[in-house]
Image (cartoon, helix red, strand yellow):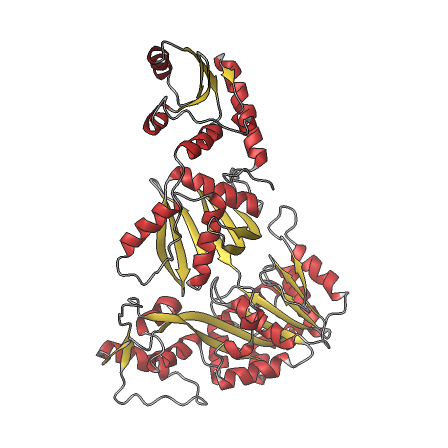
Length: 542
């Protein structure tokens, strides 16, 4: 799409000029299309810059005794009469110009000062002051530069999302960093409209839709300071009572990040994963809420499996990360009348003779059944699924497709996970746990499977976040708490027996008996090891 020098699309400018010409006819005024005036003459001695702002007028032509003012919809009749009286020695005429034309002229009369792009520092102690500075800077820049700047800063701060939130009086912009939101700026409504129009145009969504929308922005933007920024985000929009809210999920395209070595798996967990994904068939599910790292875990598995000897196909909504050597298919299942597109694409993919198939998310009965059938017929199937735990995932799958011995034999591994903020080792502060803390710790660790030794709690010190000039929040990065459910003989008997009362609790109890450690137990071990806090564990896990 082509843009004017001030960031407006040419199509939008043409439409605005057409509408302005129509209004001029209704008002019985002459009309001037200022976009057609190549060399704009400035008459700085006629009116001051402040008067141009106040009156919303522009001197367009001044030849001999003829003076033509461009007026806008905001120019009052009294101002026009005053101008006629003020320049009584001239023949004063008026013509309607577009708002875009007025802004273009004011850009020449009052050129913006050079913008200094300030780095956002969420660890800055004067946070309110910084929000004000960043907000003022954003008010000065073009829409494309605003988007590129926010994305660049989000990457620099290792943020996962950018939230643009409409409020009654202004617009709040927040970044999610290590799972927690931080306010970085506020915008006035006019600037928000400019930003949202640029986002909607780039992401192919409508600013007037009454429904939630999804989009994807992948472009390279050259900012006013000459920096090039890769904008690659997944777009989610939803209409609210104050306007359209936007969440942009950032994609990190560094394929080297997606390896099993960087997942922080324990030696036992890694051994299980390596053994499972080395099998030629079966179903592997990674479960958890949004933002728990499910997709990162799956891609790390795919990266390990990605060799010249294997054909790997993914079906995603949308494709989040692109990798060489993997065939990736984007599916828009949210489209009306296309709810079963995942299952349809999966059946088509299976005819292409893949060795490994990744399904972005199992979300309906048809997809679940097709995935299970594929895992029984010589394919290794990896998928994400929304569930609170590994046991809950099995219960939900059973609810979807019913009890079926084939379903049980297809499942190889269910991995559930949550992301906890990791304490900053340089500033964390030790303290002696209270009696209540002791009780909570022991209540959890006393239920550890027999195969997992309970840590020595004598003289135990817990840690809380400290403060430093560079990190007043006291956390640095994230650590995953996981549980791994593998199918054992006892579990298989339980799940295959139509008379058994299969509930999340019974499945979890049987899994624990077989040696499975729960997310809560794994997280508590990380608390005892000083990697995170008791409060953080219960904030995330509940």
